[in-house]
Length: 218
Image 1 (tube, one colour):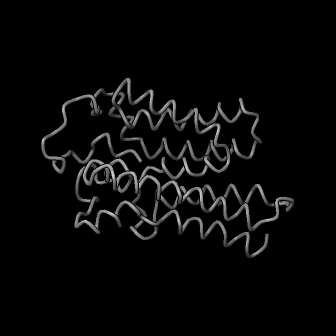
Image 2 (cartoon, rainbow, N blue to C red):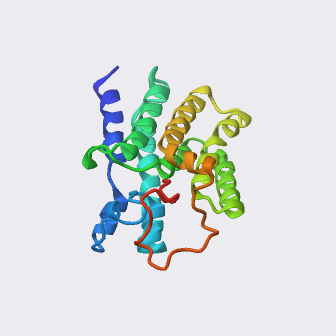
């Protein structure tokens, strides 16, 4: 393995660690780690700062997955022996960076948006299945966390049905597993019936939100 093949996954981790949601909120004088769900992802930003900054955070977090994959694909020779491995590692480390960012003491988000960026590069058609599942789940139940969990899970059969190569499926398995692990508190609340739904009446003050809010999902 060459030095370049070692550096690319490392740079992907550092890129994934950039807390865009926190950066954008701090520019508005708000530390999202202390308000709402205390999460640095797009959902908490939207809840506290509005849709404009929420969408900006979503796009930036998606780019953290998409750009490293694109860079690796352009830099590496597709015919090289380690091409699939290094591209996969770049995707995996980007998600790990978002979940465990070195800049924030390894306390990050849930990785959903970054994972979305990864598979928009690798298998955009499969992402359509994920988005449809996410939107349908949230529309029917109001649970963003459930939509994130089911949306991430559907990537596996989608890749299989689209006859994508096995290395993409292995990457999806890893990413999906990590997303579910990061959602362990949400899963517990879903099973106990205590997870909060967007269909229920919202609190008048968006900053007064229990720190275990179900919007702690991205």
